[in-house]
Image 1 (cartoon, rainbow over the protein chains, first blue to last red):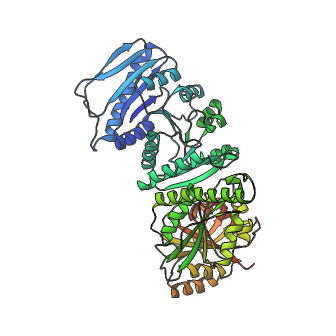
Image 2 (cartoon, rainbow over the protein chains, first blue to last red; image 1 turned 180 degrees about the vertical axis):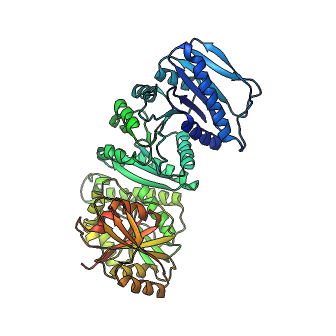
Image 3 (tube, rainbow over the protein chains, first blue to last red; image 1 turned 180 degrees about the horizontal axis):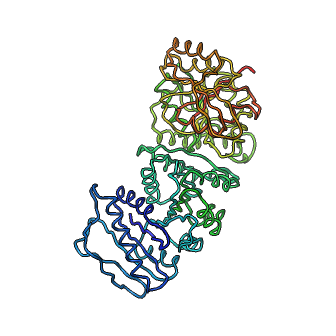
Length: 281
Length: 270
């Protein structure tokens, strides 16, 4: 798995780094931290913040068998192209990649470009706590609209009691199913698989997909519940579910969820949600 | 031996119900009869009358039978069965009810995935099938481990649900807690030991023990129905008595409608 972690200049990244460290410890993912600065003059300042994230991440995984090389050398900031830098550390590479990049310019566009360059499976962003950082509704909309991978907007306030996954299509990738499994482990939460019904009930292909997903999790000893929600009640359900749970929405092309939750609505929902939200591809 | 009728189709709800039946058979000597009813809406309008219609219906039954056989082969559950799955064309509720009324089943088992809208559960209980059902109904909403059960009662209950429960679980040695509920519209859920529980619970526990069921603890729940339902998720089965065709203001009904775990409905006299 490849995880792209967006580091917001304006916010304390420690919570997010701890969460990523736990995910990384379980998955041995390749990780790229991405710092974004409004202009090139701030690249060095952003690099210092990324370096601090690196120290935090490595100290979190320390003591376990870490797949990441933890050499203590200073980094060099190497310009790859206009507005793009890489922080390079001397020494041999670890078994898994841990890289640090900086991009200048529009945050939404930068995150999506980096996710494509690194072929990321998951973008992790800070869900924000009402701050005025780079992470805004606009950024989220751009990332959700244009990223081809899953997006996790992390909220700091509370640990979710349950991971609630909504699906209305059978186009669910294996990597997203595995990602949910990791989050269940990470939070020690239970899992609920929610099928979205239309006027004719639960579409047969969604029923079959729910069955296969349920089998996947129960075979792995994950306690998984199932539930049906009518599309007309979905907004009310989501409003209730987002209070104490991590809400995961499988939003593929042609998805009913995609139509129900406009980009604007989704951005607002993530900003106002009390818990983290995961958009799955 | 507990004879149970279970309507099935090739969907997740049936898969869950069958797997839960397997879980249940760890505790009771369960003999299962599966039935699949092909409804008119499912097979479409007949293409003609007389011989043409009959031939077409037979072909529908053959096709459905093959699908069900494949489904059961996929599930591959080692269950004790009374006889092969019955495949019948007709109205589902009427057909199932007729079988329940004429064949003396001890239990009806049905897979029904829980929905966000509690009205769906009320509609189920108000259907002709449930209103006329002669035996307890086990509504399997999710696949969970059956390690312990709860008997959900309120201050107005009598011992009738316990007798119905014991008819199924006698000698099973399953552990059963008594949960006394008092619903409120708002506030937090209060969980206390049930000092104010109906006096008959102690006698029922004694009777349960004599019949090979392990009496557990008594708990009082006081609070909103959704919080009570959430609390009860730890149980692999929640049994409760309800009158036939219950009113929506029946306090236990609201909790049962919101339950995610399987629910055993033992019909009360009132």
